[in-house]
Amino acid sequence: MEVKGIDGKLEKSDSTSADEISHLSIDIGGSLIKIVYFSTNSKCNTNDEAPMLSKERQEVPNGDLNHHILSGRLYFVKFETSKIEDCIKFLSSKKLQQCGAQCHHSHAVDKIKIKATGGGAFKFADLFKEKLGQTLDKVEEMESLVAGANFLLKTVNHEVYTYIGGQKEYVQIDQNDLYPYLLVNIGSGVSMIKVDGDGKFQRVSGTSVGGGTFLGLGKLLTKCQSFDELLELSHQGNNRVIDMLVGDIYGGLDYSKIGLASTTIASSFGKAISENKELEDYKPEDIARSLLRMISNNIGQIAYLNALRFGLKRIFFGGFFIRDHAYTMDTISVAVDFWSKGEAKAMFLRHEGFLGALGAFMNYKDGSTDSMPPQLVEQQPAKRSSSCIVDRIHNSTCVHENENGAKDCRLRVSSSFKIYDEVKRC
Image 1 (cartoon, one colour):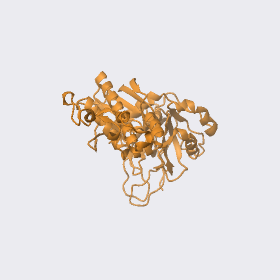
Image 2 (cartoon, one colour):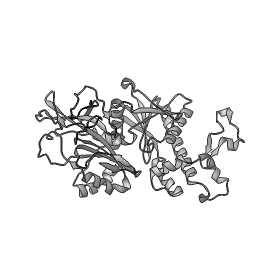
Image 3 (cartoon, one colour):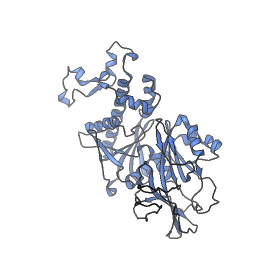
Image 4 (cartoon, helix red, strand yellow):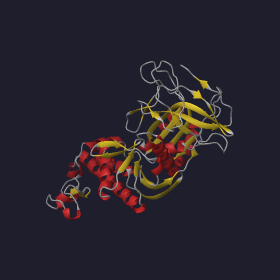
């Protein structure tokens, strides 16, 4: 099934709407709704590509508890918060089935819990209850962000990268030297969180100038109606038409005494005060470019100053404001590099926008209070085959991303029930 996301483009989900969803989490922010769900639905692939994963339940002894394994895919979907009715329709089209300890029983029809984080988990709780008959199981927002970031940094290969001079360079994270770090989550606003370990964190700063500011001012100034439309418009613009540069003040020269190049922005939108022009005299793309530059520069500067304040060597940027957008990443990277005099680098996450939803997902527990949260374990890419044969489990906690951007993985959940091996072949 393909789901239309915030930008109007089609996002890959699954080939059928009858997904058997055993775990689902949702992060409802001021601008966007982010969904992560684990589906055990599978189909054979008879061509030369790696086959879809088959369902498998496997007993894994663990003291007094048993673990069982669900094979499937982890999907990532987003909606605009203003279109929450579309989100609810999407969820209602899915087979939300309790698939914890009882997932091997054919009569398991109880609805799953929906783990929810973000302010919208409170704001829209009654709407979910009315439309879906679901009570949202709320997870604290900052806790979810940190848990999601820690999961990605420890688990997913090629998750972290720098963006310098128009080039991505993936960074290998040493798990023994991960903490402490600064997590900069750029949503409608910006939160800056000092992370010292699993469950150990403190929100140390933030700013109200974030993604909501970019879209809000952008809609007023350019008439763009969506975030991605505004980003695309900025790609075509020239901020120097509107921004006042150091060279504009110094007759085209650098201010070399304090290390400012002539191309450094002295005042965002500064040229507008000295030109006898109205809004309609400026190109929308130039306005969008200047606006994006202003906000990204501001975030990069504040982030580095907080890293300096706490002596942090690593700064990770997340949130859907970034969206793998080259100009945004370049601006943030340049800001961090400038203020740190080259001693620090901005690092970005491939699953930047789903930190909160992933963290809420990791909050799942099945049944008793002594059960363990789910663990995603590695699914190796399958070899060529006309049947859906699942590879064996490894001790690694990595997951494999398929060609659609979904994550092929296994979900290990704890259970006090007896689970029997049941490998399905297509």
